[in-house]
Image (cartoon, rainbow, N blue to C red; front, side, top):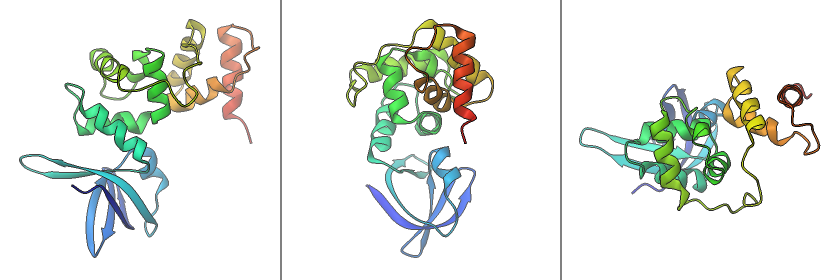
Length: 193
């Protein structure tokens, strides 16, 4: 098992990074955020998971051990393969996944490209007993209908689910429970200097 790699980035490709490790260039599939933030020549240490198939060996890499753990958890869901698990982690960070599970919001998982309603529900059910509400998430209440509408509006405008959730979290608790007002406040989050 290859648990981690540490090397210099040779190339950034659409499907991942080519990392030079001991004179060998390894193609490592990584979440989109990590791929977009990486430049050739940079040194990088990744937590990895080797997936062995009949016809190929694929290496998946993550910036944190927690991301790799969520990747493994997602692989345990019936019908979720490595590419879909990587798509989930490309769209949602572990904290966002944990919040979606804790608040039982399959619709958040359903916004991941390639994840339909049934698969989102399967992921939610599979992770419910495996992901705790730790790290300060337990007291957080489930999103109400107003915030769900604001989230949908923001993602409809092209913002990612992670960006939309971050904007929602910045809205004051004293803000009025009006969709239009909360959307206006959420949009100010993106106009910060």
